Image 1 (tube, one colour):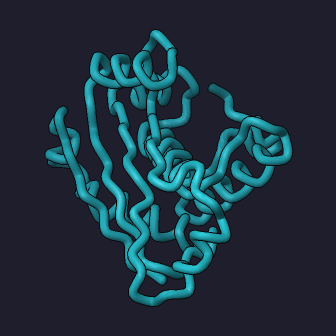
Image 2 (image 1 turned 120 degrees about the vertical axis):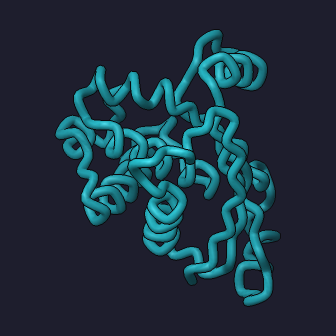
Length: 175
């Protein structure tokens, strides 16, 4: 249940922070999310820490949004038939490649100041949010948002990173 292999690509030296050992912090938070969504099979993913300029470029190219953002997720299994994938989920040797996250610490830091949430909370929020997208969750429709933000809130609360009150009550992002 707890096998999660994460490859890190750090273009902005985020992980070299002397004050915090981010890799176990990230891994444990995502393992909590994995447990909450009841993913039993092993998973692998990549996390890429990029600059504001790089994420702006990715956001414009793949999402048509001409601005930097905090996270972009590229799920490997987007659009794959659920019945097809279900056949593999019961195989204990199956390792699911869920995709790639691109995170911009600069934008996350800016959001943490703007929303007065603190960096660790905002970073955790963004990380779990992206991870849930890689696992097929979305928040386009209100019912989807309620499920996704409910899971996200529970994981973050249990990790000591509570959601903003607006997010707790309405299942919506404050940003």
